[in-house]
Length: 408
Image (cartoon, rainbow, N blue to C red; front, side):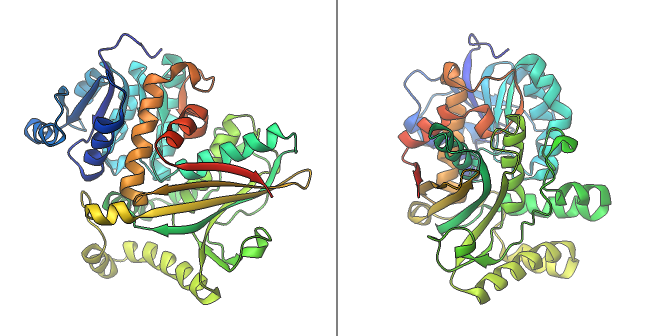
């Protein structure tokens, strides 16, 4: 069980990386007074430099990502470990395992379906025994999706308006990009799946993160690479929709939330994600570009070119670009009673950097400081909705995110 008497509330692991520094800065500026935070990574000198730049005297913890004894000792000191060190399939498994073993809550930024699947298989039973909440995907992947559906379901339930059926997230507006770490994670996943047909099947399955695939309802094909008219989602959605680059991960997180709750969203809950574009030609162009990106990572000549033009790990936009970024995501559903609802998740700041740092930092603070408001759980490998829930919703709203619901 997570021990309230531990000497630290939150450890920021990977605090010298680009997103790690942003997250540490958010905590330095917004964590409640008295919150016990430490910076962790593999270089004491770099960590001390970050602490100096932030103007904090937080403890420094040194541990390499592959040194499991050191990671286990580190995890045992804290209530929550927050990690930005990816690709997680390459660097993250020992830390997730250490947190599960020591009963330490854990949050990360992963958008890697294979890593999340491995973590479920390796850590879920252990974390249930120790009470650890291992909560993956606490950034732009996949808090807007998972928490958005969470509040949508709550609104429908409060109105006694039935269950969720066809549900679609639409990226209505977005300015900014994805981090170099996200791109590196995509590269790594392509490399692994290219060598193993079984892993390709895991990646392709819409229920790849479900706790029990055989118990899932048979809802037919649920493709991620969708192009459609906005009116096919809801009468209020204009224009055309293209595939959203993170749909193939976010949708699986949301389906896991539904399954972990005993399919509370409804037995006919179908979920997809798309982004609004200027017209049908643009929708097809986005679909082609996303397919081309995956193929390009798999082919050495194209891979060489992509590596030269895409963001590198540990890099990101300047402060002005981060500040001027934003996103708006609208989630539409029709319930089993025929009622129509919309949830909106909206934030200022570049999605993959500034907004992600807020979401990750507030996830860790909710686990560390809001224990009495967390969803009932015996621990396990959870999702933002099932592991943190309304405590996170309230913290994100207080941090400036707009999270709303309305009946249409």
